[in-house]
Length: 244
Image (cartoon, rainbow, N blue to C red; front, side):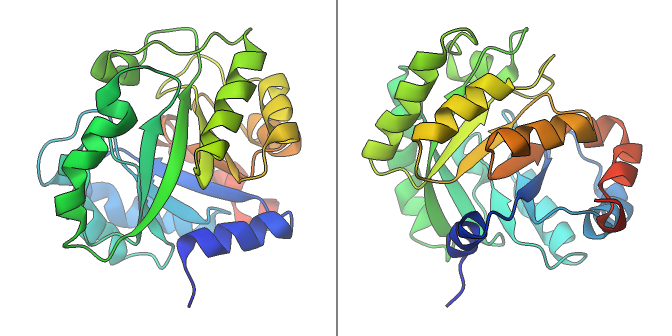
């Protein structure tokens, strides 16, 4: 039986790079869903991630229902809170913010989510989540009341990633944050990749095809692009299947 995680592992084994388009329900217009997802379908995108730091109750459920009508790509929840869990998606990244020390986002929210997850058929994928300094304070910092790891402290980023792997995480997610002024550096990605055995996700601050390719070449298995596509849908032109 196919699963989102198995497909990611298979792609990693074949060195096939994956691209996730991140949609924030709080910033996305449902009326724009059909045309936006049409561009996603024409691009090299392999997954749709849904989530945000602050999302009103019911918005995620409504958005996933709408998107499901227009694409066959797997829809993966990237939840900032329990209210963003919906059974209409295919999978959920069970994120543990291992770069911070706020117990709510290390384990607390997860315990609260269990009763809700029992009533779903979501594929739950344990994911280590590492916030890295991006040049400005992000919404994630404010909501979680945690600080990112400094970009220059590459060893701590690597050690945090490996610690998450030892704890049994199935994915590792390096995050610069929504609207980051610059993406995670090639040096950081490369150093983490050299020691990590599980698939590596990189997101935040990627605004061009060149930056996307830099992340892939440095070792990212999955790259996530969100804000850049929300602000400038013409970016999709550089990501069309026939141009890559």
